[in-house]
Length: 180
Image (tube, rainbow, N blue to C red; front, side, top):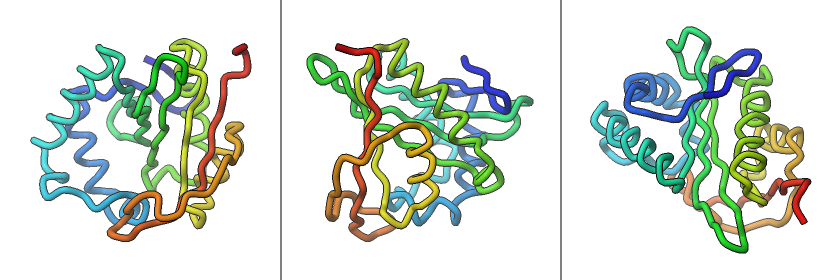
C-alpha cells in the first residue's frame, strides 16, 4: 500500500497472521510494559487470524485502519500501527496506537512510517485530528510524537490499565493543517 525508504506498509490481513504472531512472541518482553495485559489466546495463530480478518473487514467498511510495516522482503514486521475509535461527523478524529520491534527501535523507523500513515489519515481520508497518548516515562513515544508535530493537550490520571497497573497518560494530537 505504501513504501517508505526502509519499509513497506500494508493493511493487516490474514496473510500477515503468522508474522504478527512471530512479532508478538519475539517482542513479548519488550512490549509488555507498554500494553494492556494480554488475553490467554493472544499468542496463538487462531487469535491473529481472527484479528486480521477483523482488520480486513474494518478497513473495507472504514471502521478502523490497522497497518503492519514490513521489511522490503516482507519477512519481518518492523512495527504495527493502528487508527481506532474513529469518529465521523463534526469531530472527524481517531486514536493512534503503535509499537515497534526491539530490533528496529531508536533508528527512526517509527517516525518514517507514521509520517506516511498519518498523511493518509489526514490528507487522503480527510480526518481533522489524530489523537495519541503516552505514559509520561515513555520518552521514546514522546520524541516520536513531537517530531511528527503532535501537540500536548492534557494529562489524564489513571487513563489506561497497562501491564496490570493504572497508568497516567499525556494526551496529544495532530490536527490537519489545511482545514477550515
